[in-house]
Length: 133
Image (cartoon, rainbow, N blue to C red; front, side, top):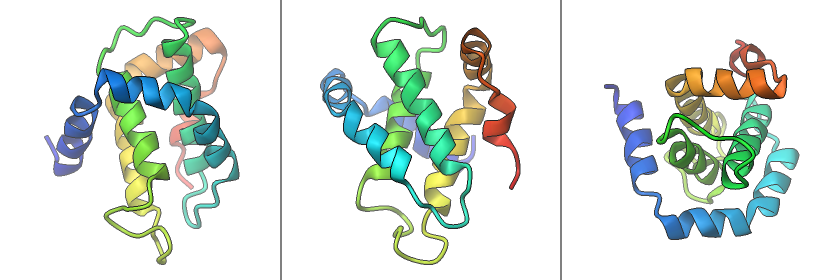
């Protein structure tokens, strides 16, 4: 397991039920942040974040039943990591969103089978979320 993978797994495992509830209560703010995100050098980050937010919302609303239990907390961790003010690489620096993009991509690839199933049910093109820019 890579260091990044361990970071994401540990981040997902640290998400508590209370944090899931708080995330749900602030979902509109997270969506706004995703819609207005301008991440230089990371053209897919906005779409990836929006996708994970849609997945999270559907799972929390019980509109979609996930077979991959860690996918939800790790998706929440990735979105929270993106929108929080403190990162490994500050967002204000050149290449500042590369750590955010790496976390987001790790979640998407680690739970690819689950996300592909979700995309198939919702007519979403998953491959475009992972396309190379």
